[in-house]
Image (cartoon, rainbow, N blue to C red; front, side, top):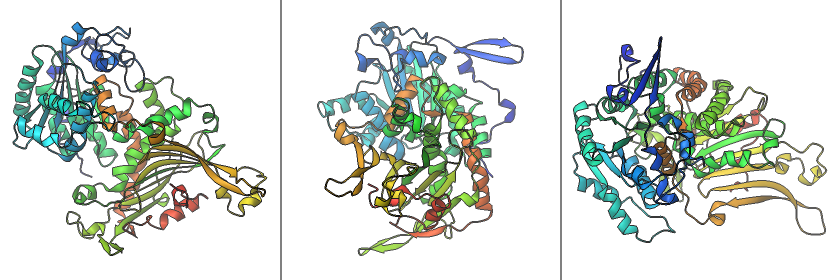
Length: 579
């Protein structure tokens, strides 16, 4: 299958650009090259302003002091307070490549403004937009100003803050494969950096087929000579094991693994972040987190709209590559991993990789695929997937998929992890549902009749919308008789925490600036994820499996119910109390 990266020569696999080598102390040991970054004070002030403008102990989103988790960026790990003098000697330059695209306008620039409004960005920062579109600085500012908003509970000085932020935003037009254009960008960055230690973050909000062109130009022409350079790469990371591996190999010709930040924005969502806290800091849950008490785990993603003009992109990937292989699988790995040694990025990612490597590759018999068809409801017509003019006629690309996965280890042996993802369904949601086993010898069995599932405890983590954690328990209805009811112990975030929840991109951008890699995907983790899905995807496409049709706005194809029943469970979101 064709790869998604630009061709790159295998002869230059071990190549490191001169701009990177100048920033390293290189020690040779026989056949091995060990690169030790120079000390840089540039990272140490990223989080300082929110903690106090004069001195602070730096922290990243996992609560660790930043200089305890970012030793690879040259910090000494002693928790030294950040002084005003140290702040003055470094700058942060953020370049959004693909600045005229929807993702940049709707997510990246608003997230950067939110960080600026909350004083999370350093004193000396600039934001550059880079794209092929011919714009000037003022036109960029006008383009993004309409997407900037202040928090609901923080409206004071909002207009002033927007003006201050926009004055830090600049634009450079250029081709994505032009080293000359990136060299010109480098010159503009140097003017803004004014001779200080320069730390540079590049966000690639572009199609995957031009990742390598941009990374080559950044590595050769726009890397920092005296600070760090990091590149955030958006999914998709290939279409299968082969193309993903080729993309990684090409990127590593110009960057080291520590410079590559593969972003999956679901890992920055509040409820996903809280998953580890819920499990590892509450004694009531950790003893139950195994095959002994858990009957099934369900990871559910649904959207109530179709492709709506994005069909051309979507048809090349489908729902399995777009949602299941990354978003849902990442949540599964966090859910199922063993207790890490610490919250250090490598310790957490090591445990996630162990989970993925312990899983059985998906079989076609454990997968149901569907595609939404046209439907009329309440006098309104909803189009079919193939009615989208950007979708090829007769396309077999699934817009819905359900799958059963298994982990071959002592903790999870035999427990089905059911995934379900789809477009044009009856509701919009993303959640994790943990169904516990039936109570053995239940004294109140007769009160539930023959439907024992009604008596099953269930823990639900609703990732979006209306973030919540709730536990379904059995409870006696007040009265003289013995009537049981299923009730919820509910933590609704909007009621408990009135503060607006930050967008996932804010957390991930902040962590990338800080050098915190815990929420980003490592290359071996990516390899293990693709190894699970690639054989099934190839078989699905080679055999031209026809997806089961389901009406636009329905709960999906009937086959998903049979898949769950095959493992003696039912989908938790199909009951009358699935809110």
